[in-house]
Each structure stands twice: as C-alpha cells, then as structure tokens.
Length: 174
Image (tube, rainbow, N blue to C red):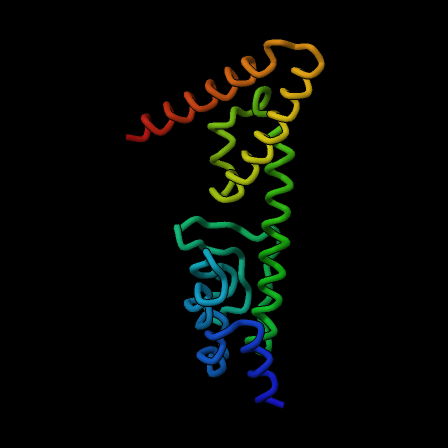
C-alpha cells in the first residue's frame, strides 16, 4: 500500500514527490513547494513552528506573503496534505480575487486604485485590474453605440489619470 501511495503521489505531484516520500514533517516539505506549485516558495508556520503542522499562509517566489483565510492543518501522508494544501491555496486565492473584484468597484469613491493595489498580491491585483478594464471598455463601447460620441475619449481620460497616479506612486518610491 505504501508504494501505491507514492506512485499515486508521483502522478499528482511529479517529479518532486519522490524526494518527499521520506519527509514526514510538513515544515521540511515546505522548502520544496516551489517544485510542486508554480510561484510558491514556501509556507508560513506561525502557530506551531516546532511541529510544523499548521500553515497560515504562502510565500511567493517574489517574496509576497498571502495569508490564508483559515489556517490549514497539514497531517498525514505527504501526498494527502499536499493535495489538501493545493485545494486550500485555490480557495484562498479565489476568495481574495472575489474580494479584490468587489472592492475595485469603489476605486473612484472609497480607495483609489494606486492605494487599493497595496491590499492585494500582485498577480490578483493584475487579474482584477484586467477584469475591470475589460468591463469598463465594454461599457464605453455600449455608451458609444448608444450615441455618446465622447464615451471612448472620456474613458481614455480615466485610464490616463489612473496610469499617471501609478507612475507618480512609483516615482515616489525612488
């Protein structure tokens, strides 16, 4: 049965899982997560660093920290908890993306985009920005079709203003 678990694990997480079969402690496996999950460097174990059984977030290869909405318990066979971890990462990123999308609707009211960006990891901020741009561009085309001759020019001004604010923010970092 042990071999079948390792073989099935190899099918789920090739080829790195062969190096995991001897690792029983989840904190030891954490350093190899980049071999299994693109963009993930490691896990954060804040609550139980001795046993390494509770993960509280992921650390990307770009050193961004993404906290889990709920801690994840990493127990049992490596293949099992890596599968559970993968599911947990997906759910966490989906929840963060949903939240980013919902809060992006208030860029012009509550929190400007250049400030809003700091609340989210780069990849999800980028995806959300692309979604918003697509929706706003489609809306501008609809307005153009509806007779608004300045719809596209007006939207271009909004985009230019947002870009200028981002450029200013980057320049302020220097």
